[in-house]
Length: 110
Length: 114
Image (tube, rainbow over all chains, first blue to last red; front, side):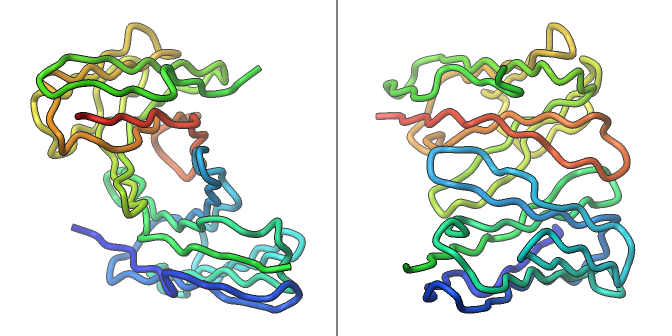
């Protein structure tokens, strides 16, 4: 069974701080997706990275796919309270299953 | 104009009952999925249908039976509900099962078995 471990599990920071969330696996994925989920709602896609070493930016969010396509990171610059939520990474395996990570709960305090 | 809609939003039922959750997408996507999210927020795939055909069937008890009458609908029927079935169930869709398209999720159905 392929596993995606996210760290940290919980993160509470002050508005304006920077943070990085990590997503690691021993398996290779054809792509890696990041989602954000808010209470009472389903996950919402933030980005998909496909190529090893790929970096994508979405305003203050920077996503990177590891060279070996086994890991990824999400960096948020100058976090805002609106960034609060559950961040989930998800990898597409060779049988086209999207496997989700264990999640990182982020709280940004005003 | 909801993209993926699930009903009901909340479902409270007694052990042993049979219940269904309905899902519809208006995105024209070919592939639909059911995921289960446990109390620790871990999302696990249950089923996937591509153009009404079952593609992925994870290790899920036989009491769970998906049905796709057409590619815009994927319903989940659960027989003989057990306490351990309590969770949030999410329906999702994607344009195609292959390649790397992101999924669009519904807002979930919180099932509580008492």
